[in-house]
Amino acid sequence: MTTRKKPEVWKKDSSFCPGCGHGIVIRLIAELIEEMGVKSRELHAVGCACNLNGCWNDPQLQCPHGRAAAVAVGAKACEPDDLVFTYQGDGDAYVIGLSETMNAGYRGNITSIIINNNNFGMTGGQMSWTTLPGQTTTTSKKGRDALKEGEPFKGPELLSQFENVKFAARGAVYNPAEVNKTKALIKKAFELQMSGEGYGVVEVLCGCPTNWKMSPVDSNKWIEDAVTRYYGLGIIKDETAKILKEAI
Amino acid sequence: MSETVLMKGNEAVAEAALRAGLDFYAAYPITPQTEILEYLSKKMPELGRVCVQADSEITAINMIMGAAYTGKRVLTSSAGPGISLKQEGLSYCAANDLPVVYVDVQRGGNGLANMGSCQTEYKREVTGGGNGDYHAIILAPASVQETADMVSLAYELAEKYRNIVGIMTEATIGQLVEPVTFKEAVDPASLPVPSWAKTGKMISSSDEPIKPRIKDAKPKADRAKYFQMKEEVQMWESTNVDDADYVVFAFGAPSRVVYDALLILREEGQKIGMIRPQTLWPYPEKALEELKEDVKGLISLETNCTGQMLPDVALARDLHFKDRHVPVYSCAYIVLDRIPTVMQVVDDIKAIISGQTEEAY
Ligand SMILES: Cc1ncc(C[n+]2csc(CCOP(=O)(O)OP(=O)(O)O)c2C)c(N)n1
Ligand code: SF4
Ligand SMILES: [Mg+2]
Picture: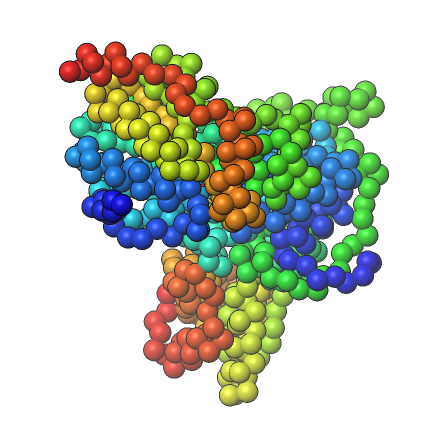
């Protein structure tokens, strides 16, 4: 058995709920920053991402709800050598912050890490644009009616339409194999940014056992069985091979 | 009158609005007011009315604007940074004299703000908030019952003056569960269609423009309207003011703490009274007519760190006491996440009486 050392950039224990996907993804990011030996600027959104306040040893900032991508573009312009990434929820990035997310993809050179847990976790489990049809939330008590309220929203697919978006992918963390694959996806997006060649987005399907009112184990099973049917895993767009090769 | 039920302040907002004939509601989730959206997202479809979970507070206020100009009763609600996002839309509603009603369940502080029960939005709400030259009528309830009563009042005032009305509650009032009795429900279809409404139906789609076409008529009309509202809408509740040496001005949740503090101080022989503004704009300046001529001081008590209401108390003082200086003191509680305890208020008032606290204005 190998023991994994706690990355230096990570300052204090996380306060996410037990079984929450957020904790796994932020750990992967912290490991990558250490492995890549870069200085990071973590720009986190409003949502359960707020739990990151005071957790990062590198510079970090709490951004207004939905606006992290715009804040990141500003930070990157001033510190182009740093790894500037946003850490956002689905509600933050795709609902209230859709405009900022799209505009950053359209012309920014940052990385967006978006935690898709199919609801607004922080505010107690309201419907998000990523809520599955029929899924009950506190504002869709009879189950989401996709005809009236929209089909699940696919952010990376939409972003991949832009020329500037060189990498778009979706990962998950419901079992160790997916955790490792997700880490590889985030790594590619980070390397792309450090090469200076464009924008990358990685969405990660995560459980929210507290608001889904499921055990962590059942949450993972539900992601594997139901969520991945709407949200296919893997690479959606990848032009990094060419870029990274040219960079070497 | 219907039977008395136990309800949260936020749910009472929703139920009272439904009973007042609410036709269209749009909002975006934010603590501590999300129960309004959750309640209405269940009830409105059952009644054949429309509740939209908008993609942002900006969208919600613009949807409200669109619905309001058809003459329907509308509502949006939010808190802290969410109300900030609505300011552009509210200014447009003011430009078009639309009678929109909104609820601000205050949370505490700048930016993201915390979940504390605070009064950090006073300044924004009473000054209009958005760009331009307008005022919303601001109602400030101190109980769940008063919250419900103020919702129906809000629609009456909004329509009477064709003006924005904001109901400014706070985390404690929104989350508190108390007995409440609602008015009989009004069927929205039975409400008269305003003459200016753009309904798309020949009978009511009058030629009356939404706003006057003549260039300088609107500012003049606005000015007259704001003076009229100032004269007619002031509301307050006073407790033991006629013989009071010191009078505390407090609204919303902290006024309930002050009420208990007054009882203790009276028992100790201190004559202290309270004026509880129920309208924050217009500020109840007329309430000072109830004070005795030789009152020793006025105290502005609120839960924010800069003393946002303080200048309004000082202005009311200047207006009333023209020949004599009456000091105005500030009790602004900087503990952002809670309202002060009764004993804290008792001690702070005693410090003012004994001359330990300097006057603010
Ligand atoms: C302007 C504004 N509106 C609303 C809120 C309340 N709010 C905080 S987090 C959140 C949604 C979070 O959902 P998501 O982005 O999916 O993150 P999660 O908590 O699920 O990780 C909302 C609506 C806010 N803080 N600011
Ligand atoms: S509420 Fe949901 S998303 Fe937020 S920390 Fe808990 S499990 Fe995670
Ligand atoms: Mg979410």
